[in-house]
Length: 103
Image (tube, rainbow, N blue to C red):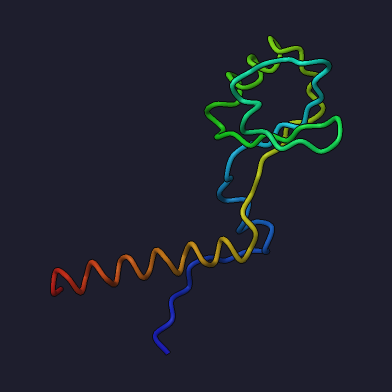
């Protein structure tokens, strides 16, 4: 009892509401250097890098200068569980604020 409706739609529509950044998959021949490489995860000859959306073009430019071959760029979205937990945390924070203010 006392529940609130926080989102309506198919699961894929709900998680599409918020992206967590952008993932760039690339290959790097030789010993290219770029500050972003320290944050990339390497699997064989391929690297994965996750950056905020607003940093995408800067990241691609750094990778281009380093000689990287961009294989794909895709949005990273929250899972349905992460979306739900975000709502729960927001409700807890709001409840704590109301409790502190006494209203």
